[in-house]
Length: 332
Image 1 (cartoon, rainbow, N blue to C red):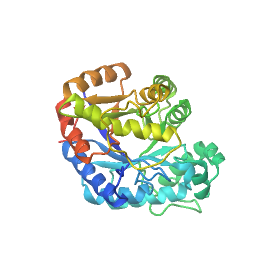
Image 2: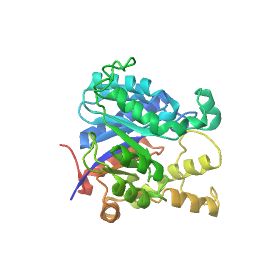
Image 3: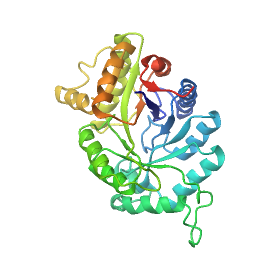
């Protein structure tokens, strides 16, 4: 049985490049994702990170929408503690008014940045505690029941933009189950609670007006190449980025290196190997076998993959090879 495949992008900005170039490359990826038949193209909100150009997520999504015609576009996700629910409803209602019923709204509970930047956004860390209430308020603004409300989202009201809950813990799984919403787990960088979160979501799911049965999307790193050595070489950009982030550093996406030896300590390597354990890197035959095992074990309804690496040519080639996997339901 095949399942849909989607793409999660951070609009990476390679070392020595500019945000404008990163966005140009992101458009290329979105167009190719649509061409090969992926179901969704999502962008993630991050702030104060020079290697990521998707901070103004809804603005960049609008640009992507203008450059594509069929693929669903959305957020993976909007970090709701950073925003008033009304403004998110207005932004995504506007996207739907522009691009029709191909908009998704994935919501995250984390601020997607550091404490200082969170304060610069005029938010407070305790704002995350209101996440369940904010999600329900946002659903209200997007739904059909706000007609008599003194405050409505224009555009947004009656749009019923599909809302997803994103997470890497049991909190998001429990909330998504309670509200009867689809659930996407961030297994591409935080896989340790994946199995437990999936089970919790499925066991506790309550059917709703939004969804009749649980729907799980799992995230993974995917880097296909014509040979194993090339795939491993380009994946070092992701590995370096993760080490730098854990060291408290920031920067653009680093160039790949022939070997990670000398860059990371033994403890850092173990940490990265664990964090990026849901990664499928290599040739089509090798990755296909690994993906078969993963899908058989966890039974996701859909997968979403990312490739946050330096070389645009490697990202494009990886996507070009996806149809050869023969395990995903691609839209022709």
